[in-house]
Image (cartoon, rainbow, N blue to C red; front, side, top):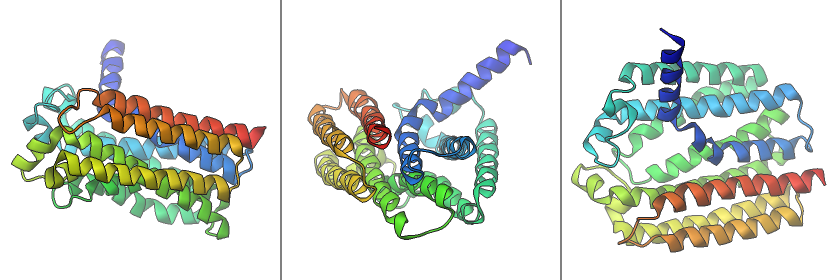
Length: 291
């Protein structure tokens, strides 16, 4: 294989797993790690947490694309993805998922025995998400928990054991879980008709877009409460809590961008608003930790 071909394959695989979407989980894992270590993690610990989060997410996304390849091909919205188009083979996606999963397990074992033992059920949960939509409308919350694990895991990587301190990252994880579940519900409104016609379970397919959007609002209210709770438990300071206030306004803006009969601004609501929220809360937390 030529160098040009290798670069092209790497780009196709990066596109397959949407590396840019790491912005949803990685900032919260890093914020939790910094809070657990009073802003002074070792370079090895920092690199290990980043590697574990990226590897876990890569495994989950590659497996999701593999498991959903038939559904993606049938759905006009997703028919342009890499596997349906033939840019990436199903075998290559499955191999990437397996390789990234092994990396995740090895990194976790290198951190501590507790992280090592928890790594396998965590990976099973991440991969299991790809099948939940086939039998439960709770798939959105399953995905939320998959991302919400990251702050708790990063804190445990620092502490090496559960303790009273673990409550703070657990509350942050709950906030992340409900935040992700809420915006995943909104994103799934695009496929309401397709999911219903193909017997797939999602809140929009079950409740309709209007009912699903109300559920997303409730989830996002819970998310704000989780973010505030983390700030108070660590404790962080007024900058982080002010950041949570701005994040709440961004969530309101996100919901105002969308209506049951108009999802034309879904990309702005999904990536722009939520990516900004993750980076904003990380930056605000760093200000309080270091200043």
